[in-house]
Image (cartoon, rainbow, N blue to C red; front, side, top):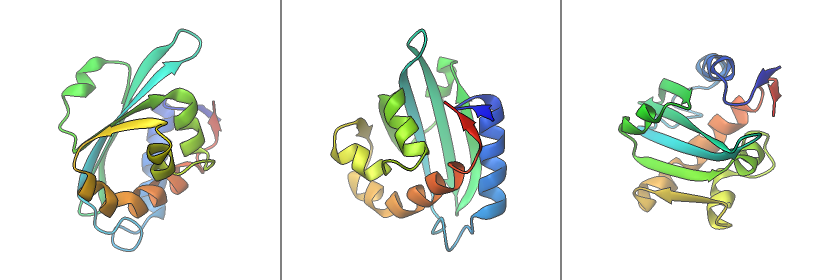
Length: 135
């Protein structure tokens, strides 16, 4: 078991995505980058930045860090929300689209492009939920 959003978790998640998802079939050759701002992480309410970048369906980067320099990464979408919401997305209790519809996360970026990557992002989330994770 690895701690959710730790460096070890990020490494295992990236390896899992690279070996288990087909860039054309599962990730629809997606070109997108997302900066997830995960807030209110217990016990001291810290924030973790969780950045993912896809080019042609390839996962180029998956970074988790408390260092605000990650915010300087170019991101098509910035998604901010509470730690508990990201846990629910990661373990499959809620889709990223449902979190957005229920105002559990706030997103900035092109809404039309967001609609085109909903399914590939759900496939990504379904894949990484297979990493044995301690929340």
